[in-house]
Length: 236
Ligand SMILES: NC(=O)C1=CN([C@@H]2O[C@H](COP(=O)(O)OP(=O)(O)OC[C@H]3O[C@@H](n4cnc5c(N)ncnc54)[C@H](OP(=O)(O)O)[C@@H]3O)[C@@H](O)[C@H]2O)C=CC1
Ligand SMILES: O=C(O)C1=N[C@H](C(=O)O)C[C@H](O)C1
Image (cartoon, rainbow, N blue to C red; front, side, top):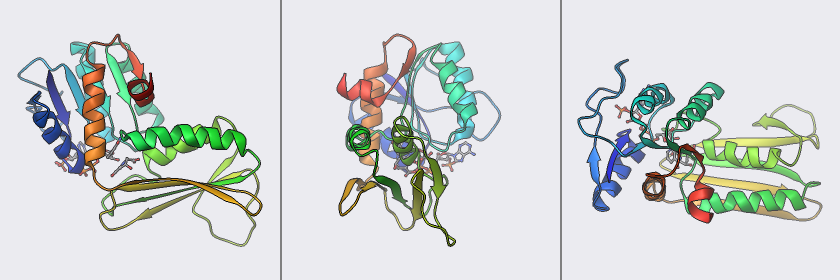
């Protein structure tokens, strides 16, 4: 298969290595991603994998409209407008968006959904920790867990906490720590009377995201147009 990776950073670089290691062809964009120029490739791309910056989503949409390329997107920090663009992309090609491509996190999301349904009376808070180069907070994965929790309970999100008032029942605290080279840690704490249930995932390198994304791209090429999830890739 012929893949292109958008993003040459910490994760994009590892994805490029995994594509090559798997014996697939890797083609990179010929233009500078920072320019307003549309994406350009010398060969027909079958799968595009994006781990870069939200600014590139509109360029990927324009490319997909013309070329119907399968797209795997891992970039986080996206706005509602970006998510609308991703939905539009799915009219032209098969698309996967996931804030996290590790098996452990996708399974954790199912465990969080189940714990939340059973423990609706308990307080819940989310803690995420990442390296000091990360630009978006809270992480995309924290937002994934929050959306899962908010599917079954009504709550206000409180980002960090300070001041002199008690926690109210209908709130979820969200806490983002940044430092060092941490690849990513997520913990969802359900706190009841005299007991706590914590569901936690720790990533020790970016390889897990890279391998998950390349696996997703290989799965996606040839699928009918539409928006897919990592749950579709791993569990269906
Ligand atoms: N879904 C998942 O499983 C995962 C998602 N991510 C997400 O992937 C993204 C990239 O992460 P990571 O590799 O750690 O980040 P890096 O900072 O290492 O790399 C970012 C890449 O995006 C490019 N870039 C930066 N700013 C812009 C801009 N304004 N316009 C266009 N391109 C830009 C950089 O170009 P240059 O090299 O020239 O600076 C670089 O290629 C983040 O959103 C991160 O949260 C990360 C890991 C896992
Ligand atoms: O920027 C990162 O590094 C990561 N970003 C993703 C997120 O925002 O959830 C996934 C992973 O935690 C690493």
